[in-house]
Image (cartoon, rainbow, N blue to C red; front, side):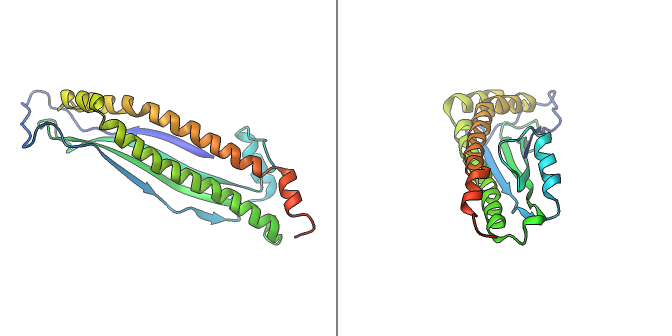
Length: 205
């Protein structure tokens, strides 16, 4: 389970004041920051509770022994928060927080199943963290292409316009991120199907 939240933060616009020139031609390069929290591991829920959560999300592809959950956010800012300079830079922040790997507590005393579940959901967590890192690189590259950089420069110091341009420019990258991560999760879930786990743990606790 992963929650996508796309936010937009922009300062007030004082259109009546004249724009001050930059010391160097054009606005500064866009800045893309990434913050990824470490996942917390827990065994607080039962198999029945975990199955119910999966069912609510329409996920019946495999027998759930746990889950991985997180909060993904992308925020666009124009810095500094000052509309009277063409030097204000675009900043994009990507955060991955509230990360949790939950394993059903009933299988704590079954080492094989427990290890398989931990490995599986850690795979989900690692895949998402890697995908966010790749997204940051694609966003950075996209914002520095001549086409987008030219529009951003032409729109300075209009903060709302620059924010809108930035969001439109990175939307294809966000769509590719979602599709790629969904495909990775599907491949991981194929490995977690009942038959595969039962065969792997056959005769073991």
